Length: 487
Ligand code: TRP
Ligand code: ZN
Image 1 (cartoon, helix red, strand yellow):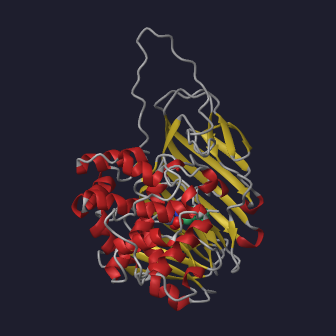
Image 2 (tube, protein in one colour; image 1 turned 90 degrees about the vertical axis):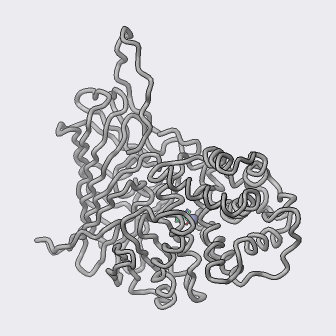
Image 3 (spheres, helix red, strand yellow; image 1 turned 90 degrees about the horizontal axis):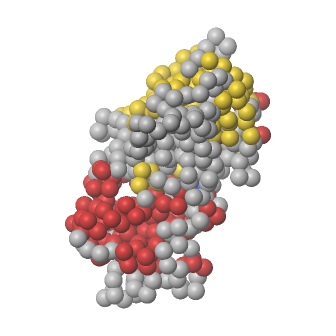
């Protein structure tokens, strides 16, 4: 969905091109095999059963897509063993290897053809690794979680696994009756099946990236509420949380946080709100409409900053997604800057103060300053610098263009790229257009040059901030925890 169509047309007298294989990757500089070429997905219908005792995931995923080239074959990203596979009702040949599911239809597919791809499978996700890593998580309550970044989909549904190809989702999962099942968007009911499993149905009606799609199976207390704006607000708290009250004191404020963030970033782009808190994950992730939080964010009392961070990602990351993973600053720098805006709202220090204090408190010889937030490389994709220096870069932009243009830039970005993708270069271009100021050298300094910038995020006239803003320690700890989750 939303992939730019190729506009080149062959001259009328050119010989027809032979159908060729769709590329095994969508063209990501950091992860060459992520996503695929030759088709564009519109919708995923994921209809599975999960039996936690044997880590057994079985059922059918149906993908509707459109061919964007003449295809002799194409790939999906998937790790599990496939039982049957049909393309437009005709059985196709298939083979899985290292996260790539190669599909060879009985006959070549013409560009523009609508595809219905039906994949059935029955396997244990916990057996598989991609990039040397098992992202499928088993939890202490006996359940499982499919939440990770940049890759998680290959452990539970076949997909075009890249933020460039978003789609709508119906996620329907049956599990034993003592387990709750959550995913994204709105709840579409649950019912007990003949075999005793309870089937939970979820629907995301807005374009959603594959890594923002979550599966949560476990022992949770699930709350169905309505936010002041009328949207469903669904929260779930693990039955085994060490600090359930602190978790609630944070995540139950989601509607207020989204109201505040809407004033800063523009209208909330999705149809539902919520959050899931699990034990011992060590991370938080911006799953669409329903971020996931580890309860270790709430061991020192509440943390509304992590809630502000993950919900800011609904605009920056989920609605406007990276066009390639090298643009990760567009996610993490913005979500971390949002924490400093939330601090200002709470009266715990202005964004200018928090970012200045961060700049002042990290010495120039700290390795922190050696990572480039604008192109950190796959090994440092979620480095602390992408978050904290990334947030300082936005404060530096705000200083350069002034408050009015700064928030105009943020709102125009979320509006013009809503449900789409963006690159850092496109953001810089927009900032220059709105402000009428040349900004290349500012971004070169803050995003693409190793070393501590000589001038702080509030400009040359500001001297060292001596007093830590009230929120500083919490925000810094939250960002370091989030960065550590990324490895
Ligand atoms: N994007 C997450 C955040 O900051 C952090 C993150 C990076 C993460 N990689 C991850 C979370 C892997 C879970 C798993 O909000
Ligand atoms: Zn983040």
